[in-house]
Image (cartoon, rainbow, N blue to C red; front, side, top):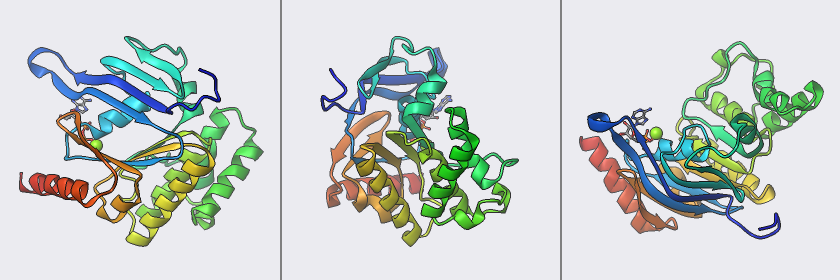
Length: 253
Ligand code: ADP
Ligand code: MG
């Protein structure tokens, strides 16, 4: 396969993860098959404990799989073991993570938080800060450039975290509940931005969400239940009903 052959950016084959052994064993993800293509923005739904974060962490090479194969951009990165010695570099090059809790470093200001990943990837300090400024302006938090994370509102902190995730122009962008702290209009801006990145950088964007406001913005929706993908669909009324059923079940338990 050459770099020009169309291929998925993410390929999971029988990808599984269990935590613990024996009585304590939890099968968090059971043999998931999934292909994600450049340019698409997909939603990941499912009740709490269904394996959404585990799947994101496996794709992001943050957690080691237990079985199966994981290929990123045509390169097999896990099959029985990690096939890349430098996982940190792999993550820096290929993956942008937007965490549920934004994980900004409290002792750095907003610009420095965004510039840090560029710095780690080898950019000069001036280039890193210029890129940080451009992204922060784009996300309408440029005026907070010199603020410390503790003084930001929830929505501002989330937009800074998104800027940080996009700084290296990764082609695989993984977001765990990125709009939970945002109102409808701001959630829409974030989804527009992620869509633009997917198209312009031939990236794939995976968004874990319970946020009904954004369900109709996805190209495809996967629903997880007990560690399996039980439904794959466009954003149809059917998949929405399903996920709402899940939300009700969770609320009732
Ligand atoms: P979701 O994000 O859909 O809520 P998770 O992927 O966080 O689901 O969790 C899936 C299952 O794996 C749950 O039963 C959870 O308790 C378990 N789990 C997740 N992380 C760990 C861990 N580090 N150690 C043990 N069990 C875990
Ligand atoms: Mg989770």
